[in-house]
Image (cartoon, rainbow, N blue to C red; front, side):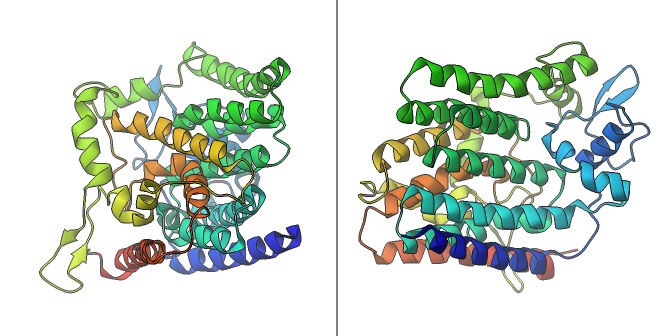
Amino acid sequence: MPWRTHLLDAGLATALAFALYALANDGSFMFFNYHLHLAVAFLAERLHIPNPPSWLTEFAWVDGRAYVYFDPLPALFLLPWAAVWGLETNIAPICVGIGAFNVGATRLLLGRLGTSRAIANAMTLLFAAGTVHFWAAQYGNTWLLAQLLAVTMLTLAWMEAAGDANPFLLGLLSALAATSRSPAALGAPFFLLLGLRRRPRLATVFEYGLGGAIVAFVIGVYNMARFGDPLDNGYLYANQNLLAPQHGSFSWHYLRQNLYHYFLRGPVFESTFPWIGFDDHGLALTLTTPAVLLLLGWGWSRRATDAVFRGRIALAGTAAIFCLYLFYFWDGWRQFGSRYTLDFTPFLIVALALREDGRARHRLFTLLVAASLLVNVYAIWWLRFARPG
């Protein structure tokens, strides 16, 4: 298929996604903007946030100074806006733009993988409006900004892996994903395997490691300047103080509740119209995006390049990141869908596309994709117009 066809489809998908996300956003100023405060601090040559507003409470406090313990890439991304508008910047429309970019990049990725045009467009539609990415992009608080940028970096890494697979760029992009969302680091070994598949030699490992080492060094210096330890970003310490999880941040004790949350948690049924709503914990992944059940099928694409290997890598990357959250004490809270699943959504979309491209079209595929779209569109409508209070 000519590359200009992929570019045309990706451009159209980007424009439509931008319109969809902008229309869904309610126009409110997003006050939960830790990364914006950090960007403003960087411009003032500070690492801490002086006199943070009362509604921002998630800081690591050291010697009376408030440090943002979230990963710093979103703050660096916001520097141009912070330089012009400072704390008046509304990060919500920025998230709309990032989300639209992610949709276009996903379409280009699926084209580069060699899937059919029909599957590439269907999976792009699923990603744009049938996953929690829809809610995240149109809402856009500081946590979602980080997850959207992690999706960006992981998608770009997959694009590189499906193209030239330059090991340095693969290492750099996978490391940048982890500086937006730390759990994305668990996907890094799989990009190395994709690089080795193209260039099976020791130099590939060295070049890949160099890309990641540059980012790791910068983050280590940043952590050292704040907490005196290059490996301490303040996150686990702050969690213990703020939320005091009973068994620590990670434990097998949380497995049962997380299995329920990610696979079984349903909506809230109400006695008045519209009868179906949601609580702050959100829906299970299997209900937010029922199309994930298509992974239970068998076979891989016969037309996509190296589909079996790449499909298995995509599944393994999904599982690696997902398993971390199965043992984590927190489910994300105040969300529509399970927002933590965004940290592996690019892997998931690749696996779904390569799985479905290996089959003749069937009614179950259409039904599950349509159900995914319906659930997410209904959720955005409910959150905007029917949510109590």
